[in-house]
Length: 92
Image 1 (cartoon, one colour):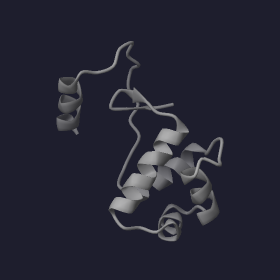
Image 2 (tube, helix red, strand yellow):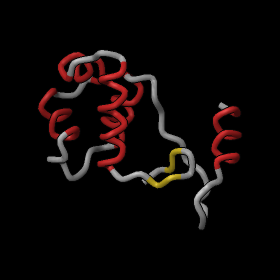
Image 3 (cartoon, helix red, strand yellow):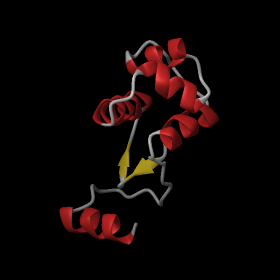
Image 4 (cartoon, helix red, strand yellow):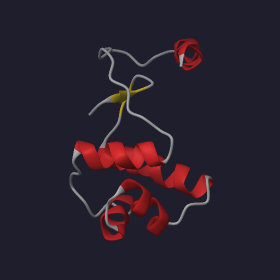
């Protein structure tokens, strides 16, 4: 899985972030699904852990509809420090 802020995320972790952001900006599943060009049932399955995998295009569309993106970076053998995370956030 791609790394976000140096943390390897599973599909379940990505889904958790999608739900969190969707709710924070007040979008319904139906509205987000329309914006991301996916079915509401696919989004519901993702958000509720009933989907084993989802293609890159669908994930990318969902994230873009929420103003989010995936980042790819070199894997590290250790967890980043708080300072490294804050520096990375400032670079964005």
